[in-house]
Length: 138
Ligand code: 5GP
Ligand code: ZN
Image (cartoon, rainbow, N blue to C red):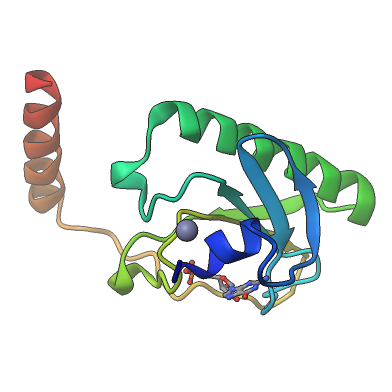
C-alpha cells in the first residue's frame, strides 16, 4: 500500500489521532497551518471528490462537523476554514480524499493566495450555461 493516509488508517504510520468511527478518521496535520489544524478522511481509499461515493461523503462531512464542534469546545475556535484540495494544481499533495479543518484567529495573517478581482460577466455566464447544461442532462 503506497498511500500514506491508508497507512495511517492501518496504524502502520503514527499520527495524532483524535477520533475514529467505522467510516472515518480524524488526526492532526503534521504541518499545521494554525493551532488545531485537523484532517478528516474516509477509511475507504478514494483519491478525489470526483470519484467519491455520496454515502462515504455523508459519513465524512458528519465527522468534519463533529470535529469543528470539538475544536470550538476544546480550543475556543470561532473561525474556521474548511479546505478540500483536488489535483496537483489545487495543491493536493496526498492522493487520499481529505478535508482540512483550519482554525482561524483575528489577524493571524494566514492567506490562501487568491485575490478578489471581479470577473468578466460574459465569461461567468458562459461557464454557468455549460454547467447548467450538463446538470439538466443528468
Ligand atoms: P493537501 O495538500 O494534499 O491538501 O494536504 C495534505 C496534508 O497532509 C498536508 O497539510 C500535510 O501536512 C499532511 N500530511 C502529509 N503527510 C502526513 C503524515 O504523514 N501525517 C500527518 N499527520 N499529516 C500529513
Ligand atoms: Zn489511501
